[in-house]
Figure 1 (cartoon, protein in one colour):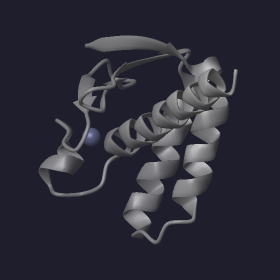
Figure 2 (cartoon, rainbow, N blue to C red):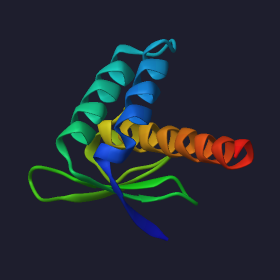
Figure 3 (cartoon, rainbow, N blue to C red):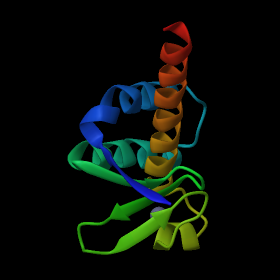
Figure 4 (cartoon, rainbow, N blue to C red):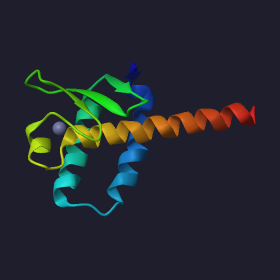
Length: 110
Ligand SMILES: [Zn+2]
């Protein structure tokens, strides 16, 4: 089920997720995809995301809507290349997970 998340609310966790991802060994193509995906997220006010499947709805500038998780509908994915949509989906997934873990700790600490 898709939920609409506020980018502002998730910002700290997104920044932590991208910082963490930047430390990971990856190809230059993935590195570019990661930075472009992060850039996209920073430019959007709301993130439409399905937590259960880790699927991000990605609205491209040309008006195309991609549903990205482990796969994508874009040309890069068709050609077996990393894409910013999948990178953005992974960042959101990690950020949402971090946020949920923090909320859980706060709950039990209270
Ligand atoms: Zn894609």
